[in-house]
Length: 202
Image 1 (tube, one colour):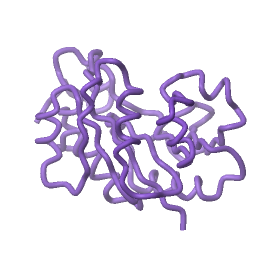
Image 2 (cartoon, helix red, strand yellow):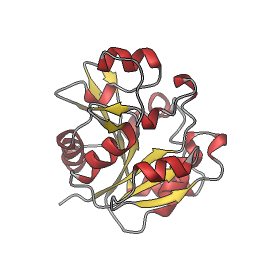
Image 3 (tube, helix red, strand yellow):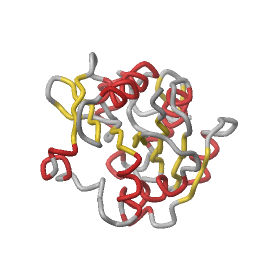
Image 4 (cartoon, helix red, strand yellow):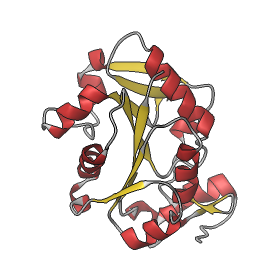
């Protein structure tokens, strides 16, 4: 059985959302960050490390009571890759792959996560699995455990958007049956489009 752990990125400033921390936004009555964490916990993931940074106390309170491992990234202002690095460094259990998860995917379901775990185990090539929907690349991405070590050694930068274009031999694409992997929340307008109401926080 393929084992996959996850790094959940929750350290960003969510600047495009304005004064609101998007991780507090209510989706189906639940703060977005907690909803994402509960989805991951309901899946077949082995271990989940949450990387905190901006408003860490707020994020921690949102996730209170959930069986997660937390790490604080003191360098979160230096970009997402620092959080990816801190999360990968903090994984405590060996596994076949690591899923790099965003906190702001309001449609993601446990079945989507499990489909990616299964696809990662069955892939025919590559050490990076990228979900797609109708040709559009999405998230979360799953990397081989060997890629984890290359990142920690400074040999690979997963935050570089050109990684996929420059290293196609590393990538195995997986077409999803729905659009959940390509929908995220970055702006108030996107929240209104999703929920039909103005931004509401917990």
